[in-house]
Length: 287
Image (cartoon, rainbow, N blue to C red; front, side):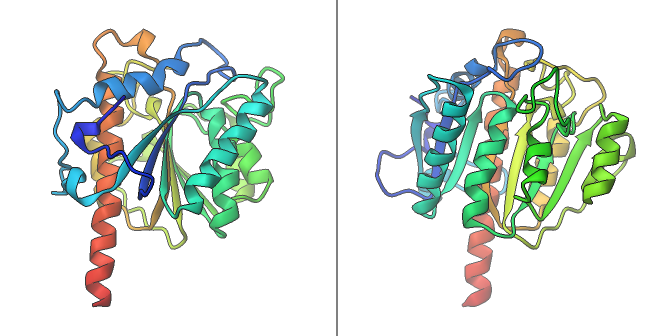
């Protein structure tokens, strides 16, 4: 199915659980991100990459990772949201870290609902070209352009930090000010950013945060974005306890050579490596 450089195990006991959700019903422009989970898996083959992260973590030996396959996305979007929330909750009940492969960004809403039941307060680090704070988009309050509006209004997050924004509207900025959202726009990123979180941290990563030169395989290409290197450096320098990750909006139909899916694999592996490194440092500090 997938191996992420040979690091995937076949066991009922795990620390990290990869879950694919091939769903794009809430995409507002073009379909195709339902193929994202499989594209990411294909790019993760150990025939092409190894299991080591840049931080020196051997994921095969130091991380117990499983792939739970794809969620059944039949039924209405409410059915999919309910199944997403339930499946993520099951992963959390094992004290494991969910690694969700999207799919469109609407899925972050039910994922966070599950996380907020276990982690209260919860912080979110949101990488995206777009704030996804529309109250509704084309009449749809559950569009992939609206998940963080729903999350904020339900009080599911203590702190929301958005990085890489370069398509904000006046409405988005007003909502950010009203709710104390830290919006770090691309126009203001000229040097390394220190990101520090005190509460358990969920990372939601929309691949269009990357400049199209690094990730053309997205439905909404927005020029002037982050490089893959910048993102990896931010992950390495991040301070906080990461409790989950989604990587969404990979549209392989727009990327004939698969560099977007490869970047997604890199980001996933570096985030897992970051979690492993942080846990080791905590053990050393306590000993």
